[in-house]
Image (cartoon, rainbow, N blue to C red; front, side, top):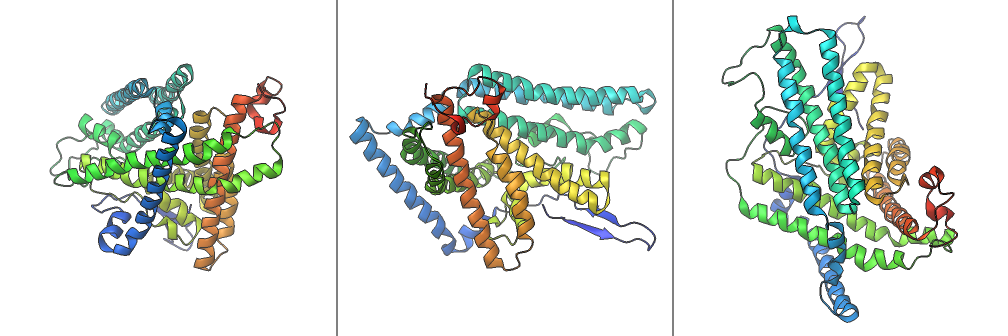
Length: 457
């Protein structure tokens, strides 16, 4: 991550003071929305991918009719992934409802007069918060494994536990100063304020709106444009089908015939290069489907006016800019609650270096958590790509001054990374279903089985 802060020198003898920016929400459209509206040339990439989607879809229909005798046979993968969606959504609803507990506990603590509060009372509140987060992650994961959820439903559980936990943490962190003011009697009502403590309606709106920094109020649009809602919803479903077509028509046929007991190292490497186009299409679908269509869909329904969820990451000038611009919503949270906290805790340039490392590490851990749980493997490809190779590439990118050279390097990094992701996780998925366990112990769990596979089930 870069360092979006200023250094202020109050006096010659004083130490440098690091002044961090604060998030401001204002009405604005997503970058792609603006580009599509202002330039016909910007739609070329969209039209190209729409044409690719149409060709993939026709190929799948032809294959379904000729080889399987029924159209839309290829939707079996969607059905398999979402076969337990009803129970998954029930658990998700319980997860969301549980956030009422920290909201009430925080409100109760904030309204206890300071004379009745002791260090022990505050310690109890901190312990209760840590216990809540621990149980909040534990019980959904227990359900996930006991129910044997498939990949998509597993992603729903793991990603939503992370998202909701980040929301709860932001709500608490942003309101602790207000609680301290109330407890000490220093709270001052501002003109137009109805209450000096957030209402449950404000908290509930924050839980679902596409923002990770809590505010009492956000910029809102006057009306809901239902034509936009329909368009964004259509794109979300179309992009799920696009990913489904890529896997059923290209990835699954290739890996299903792959024998991990006899495959050579050169064949593994060739598989990586062969699957790069599939990985890149999935990456673009993830970006457009989630960061553009899905977030704009929720914004429109909730009349949330700040639609700047990403910036022009595809034309970034360095790796720090790419990481920030890819997902501005999550970047805001990482900056506010990890980068800034660590930097202030340690202080100086050393603190900034530790803060950057902490952000990279947290991002890598959670990406590995989502994919590792979904695929039921311990094969830290995502962790290595984000933390190790991403860190190395970040350091190297700072020495590249030519914008064109850097952009080529960035796309090379994305292409090889997505190829590694699809190839390695795919190979390990099939190896885990076909190969005998290695030593039948913890060693087997932490060792990629397609490295040790010598005998099939």
